[in-house]
Length: 328
Ligand code: MG
Image (tube, rainbow, N blue to C red; front, side, top):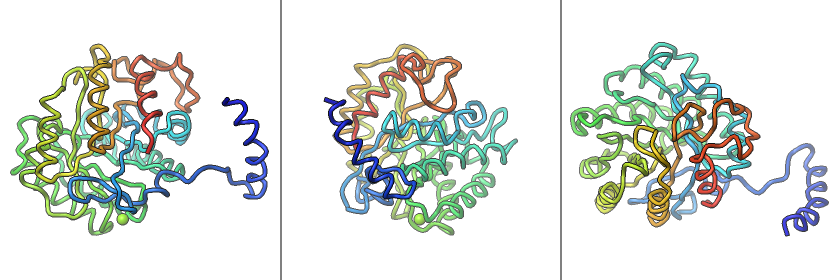
């Protein structure tokens, strides 16, 4: 069947290629289709006003898996995995992070953002910090620059605080930090979607929903790891949505919350049903070949895509199927 379709389409594709003076024929990209994402009540909608639910991949800490921050990897994730969004995780603290090497990490992040725009998919610019409220000045500088550079691009989503820790207070730490960073972004970009992390590793979306930020295009971050988090976390998410908050799952894993342990396929299916039901978008952690269950790649996989099944881990195989089957 596939062969027959290809045989029929090939002459048409060749004609379009010739007529298009070097451009490749393709269906409109996902960003062309949905435009800039916008919070409407407790949903995230496209320019047409309908809820948008997208599946894609999160890159790993930029300072440690920077080799995958390439245009070729982004293009492969779009083409072979059908990823509709990617997440560039700008490592902030720890060895080699933004605090010690702003230029190096900025270059990795912008390589992924530029490639996502080229491929007409969405991209989350993630400030991958657990204590962002202790590095406000650096976050302000980083997001001012990102908003100045990318604020007019509908592809871009800002994620300003990856995972506040369990002892972070929404009221005293996270919300005041978010309000300052959002003001810095809004000085250059009045309208792109901003996603704000929530206490306890971005699980307490209910706390944020009870005391929301005043901005017309802010959603809140929910993270889960299928081996660790189950129905009680989904109940928190439903409580937040009932309170009127829009949620985005900017990071999820197939295994335990520490990135290891077995792939919990049954729990993954429950979470996918949940996200489908609530029109949530999600990025899988992570594009990495480090020896952790959550990595999609086996050690030594190419940083230019073209991965074969033998390059993928069990998590990578499962997640590829999830993303390819998600639609847009
Ligand atoms: Mg804008």
